[in-house]
Length: 121
Image (cartoon, rainbow, N blue to C red; front, side, top):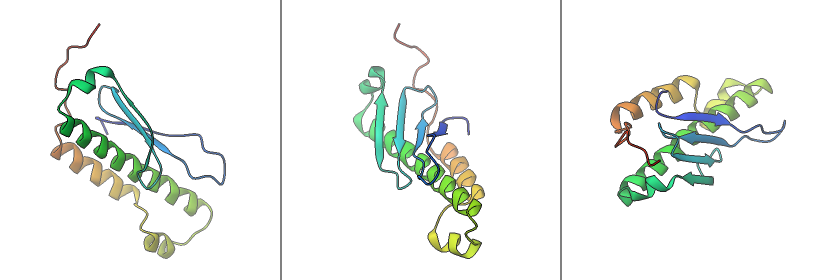
């Protein structure tokens, strides 16, 4: 998905991974648990000039995106461990198709283009 880099942390076997998401320019990066609880937030100083409501909305969007990816990672771990499809469905863990669909909707709904291509040097 073009507007966000998403990467899993290298969690050891048996641990649930945290996931990191970033905006298009990489100027906002957030690492969350699978529930979307932020563990680390990095915001470049240029982003702090934005409207606070827009910045908060972007942080929330990135938390949700990363949480969906973390839920998908957990689903894959449980599938690899032999958990059946009914149990996974009952757990409410997202499927790959659900995550992809949500990201497409998100890209169409949110203004994900940078507000300016100019950068502070």
